[in-house]
Image 1 (cartoon, rainbow, N blue to C red):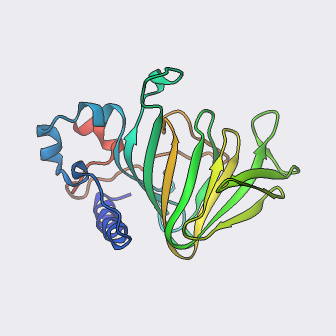
Image 2: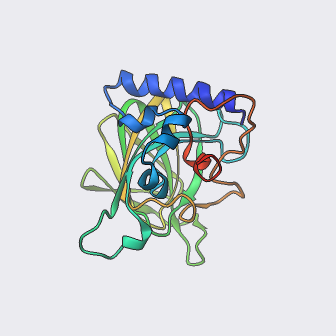
Length: 225
């Protein structure tokens, strides 16, 4: 993905987020130079910040996701009594834009429709070998109420609704009827190791540097800081 396209998506996404009354933290608007000048050690370590992915497929409009991690704990603290054991993200799933089938090993997450169109999730259970179980029904909790769908069934969340997904719950999602602002509240988030995709794809975009970054992505931290 070209950096110029990433910069466009950042601006478009920020405007969409603001249109729903969500306010980003100040570090979201640091330039790369300001990022280097400020105390960014914990932000970098916890991998908080902007994240735009096309999963390495170079087809963002068809398969991609915008994310911003506002807070995050550390894997090393899991199991401790007094630690940040949670994470929070704001995301945008565009109309008919696929976030492909995947699951997590550790993370429990609430996926929340914060506004816009419907959020559609395709759901499967995990088979004994870790793959997709295409024969068994799936039960998930939607705002405290258990909902069951058949394998590959579609769960449609209206604005304000949320679903709790447990480790092993295979899921893909997209917006229906319009772009969707999505909240995520979860266990500590580790996008480097805790995403298992059904397709042979990557978690992050391959960036072509055709212009300077407006803001750094989480995936830029190791090379730009």
